[in-house]
Length: 206
Image (cartoon, rainbow, N blue to C red; front, side, top):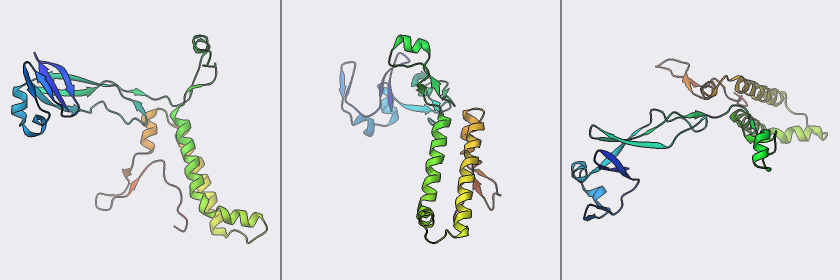
């Protein structure tokens, strides 16, 4: 990504090479690839340095659009302060309904991320158990009993799913929620063991 700098201000941003006109001169798009940075800067074209200091994971935050600046010979693109996504559902209010009749008071305006993450846990739990569901169905229909090891494991999977949902629901804010999914080394540098606080589903036979 490049910026056109005029009078020490960013006047154009180019996300890809393109033909351009600066003053009375037309330039082909391949100058972005063929010219050196110094040659481009001589006509006012600077490669943009991306500053991701404020950029947050979009699973937990809404980021701002980039803003562009030029200072001390460097063109930069940076983000403003991000906004945390709501943990719980935001509902339409009476005022929302007054402004738009399709926005019914009490219905969900914006789904909170906790509900979505809990739904994902339910889905993962179901997928984990699915390969052995046929044993449960067979036993329920009068067939061979489910082996005790399978029964114990299935119960452990459901227990873990419930525990995960409690952890998610107890998170005080989005940073605490994100930390549940962040892998950390619980071992040593020589023998690293990467685990996340939320944990993992039990593995059958492990």
